[in-house]
Length: 326
Ligand code: B12
Image (cartoon, rainbow, N blue to C red):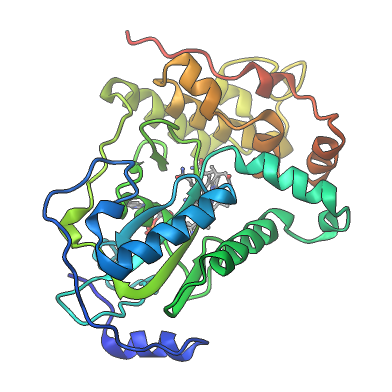
């Protein structure tokens, strides 16, 4: 297993946290819980109490897909040369408790409400990341964690701090990573979910085999279409996204390719990766048009229009066509 050596755990501890050793009482069961269960049943004692209270504080702030996992299970998926390990704070054979902070589309409405409440926010460089960080910090405050902890944000790319969130999502059992679309795909939300952070706590985590291995819900028969779309995107998206979608009008009203709109090809890929979901489930899961446009383009005029309730985008409203197995 590729766990972080003790010196590095101590280095992390020196990085703003005083870490005390806690008696290891890892009593996780060997039967993996069902995916989507947050894995809380795989914990006991203080670990279970603390994780339950943290997850309920995070859920109250819109992070509806939080899941507990052992940091060691994520570390074991990393190639040796990377600098993306999580600190392992418990003496073996105990594992270290980690919580994946994830959410589905509902966080967007909370974000807009927060911006409306304080019009100064849109002037920030990245109001979305700033909002998520504030909400996570507030949830940590509510949970009043009795142990030291380390928060790793998904946008922090510094060596030694970065977390490969998609590997963490797979290691937590929340959603399998699909090699065709390069996205994690959830049983209920398809690819329409995001990972904001991992919180590592100085408490024993679940046993490595107590966390389910998520199944990839994308039907095998959809893979060829995903693969050809990905190839087109890699080679042509910057120039002509309508080649990918095959739908004139998806870029501009007249179908003219526009390099600035190449992101729509990536939306098409995500829609394709979600097209196996039943129609109602898809309607509930898919991000709203303004949410999609902002996340993919980071265009502040999209945000401005969304805040004014004036954002309109026919192509994004139309959404994906249902996938029919041939
Ligand atoms: C850098 C980055 C980008 C870059 C480059 C991406 C690339 N493929 O190189 C750019 C800016 C282009 C980009 C674009 C997008 N990104 Co991006 N991106 C990231 C970021 C910050 C780091 C990824 C990375 O470089 N990892 C480092 C490498 C070395 O890690 P790696 O494990 O070896 O390899 C990566 C993948 O290939 C995959 N992987 C490879 N092999 C294996 C094997 C296994 C077993 C598993 C599980 C995973 C896996 O996982 C890693 C990526 O996380 C992550 C957040 C994060 N901290 O992880 C988001 C992230 C991957 N992006 C995300 C998204 C949604 C997008 C976009 C779709 C749009 C958007 N921003 O909303 C677009 C379009 C990409 C697409 N495929 O459709 C989401 C994915 C959510 C999901 N459901 O999976 C993430 C997790 C951000 C988040 N907050 O949730 N992204």
